[in-house]
Structure formats: C-alpha cells, structure tokens
Image (cartoon, rainbow, N blue to C red; front, side, top):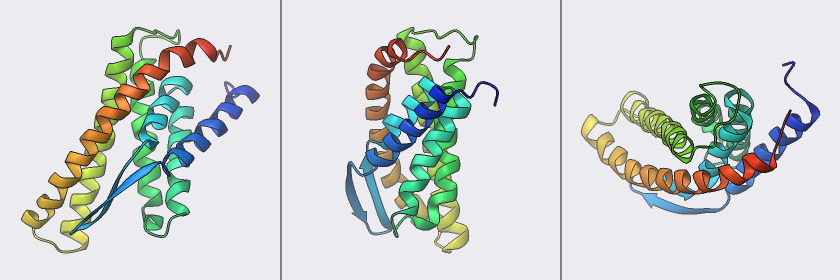
Length: 181
C-alpha cells in the first residue's frame, strides 16, 4: 500500500465510477434461460487494469461492477462473483501489461494481447459460473445448460472483441496523459 498516493486513489475512484456508469450503457437480451446484456463496462475494466496496474485496476473494475450489481435487483445476488470476475479481468490484463518491469511499454501489440488475455479470463469465468449454476444449483441437464452457454458465449465474445478494440485504442493516449510518479 505504500504505492497508494492521493492521485492514484483519485484514479481508482474515477475508474470505479466509470465502470459503474458504463454498465448502464447496455443493450439487454432476453433469452429462454435468463437475461444477458451487451455493455461497455468491460472497456473500462480493461482500461483500469492497463492504466492502474493489476491490483488497483482490479479493485476499480471489481468495485464498479459489483456496485452496479448491488443497485440492480436482477443482478444483486451476483455481486460477489462479479467482483471477483471483473477484478481478475483487469488484474490479468494489468499483470501481463506490466509483467516485464514497472516501466510502461506502450507497444500496441502488448496492449492488445494484455486486453485479449484479460477478456478471455473473464469470459471463461463467466461461462463457467453459468454452467455451474445451471447444472449444480438449478438442476438443468448438461445439454440444456450448454444451449444457454453457447448463446451467452456469442454475446460475451462480441462484447469482448469490442472491449479489446476500444480499450486498446484508448490506452496509449491515457498512459501518456496519466503519470503517477
């Protein structure tokens, strides 16, 4: 925590708020097995990991997403797993991006790869959670659960591609504008 400066704390709060608000920019999809949505929250989750690093970025992504769930009765019970999944999305992206050393490497390929790895982490966790819930909690057959998983996978991968594109484009100018040391 000795790296936590007032400026970094302000950016954690800012990214938490951006993640929270961007989750409201969504297109809901109703399916026979439940609701899903396309939203811009993952863009800011990725940005928080790439800008703030794995720990603080993961915290901002997890808090902003969990707060959104807590304010929506449909997603209220998902808040703890959402916190963990979004934390890991940003943490994996941030960890890979800052992996070599603490110096920021603004190579576009590294930003894109870090974003892809973070987004894939989230998609795997999200679909895994859906499968476990359907089969072990709701008692659906594996085949019925896979119907929903395939549908959610299509939306998740579309959301993921869009998130990677936007986050990759926005990261370079933000890194140049935001200096912590």
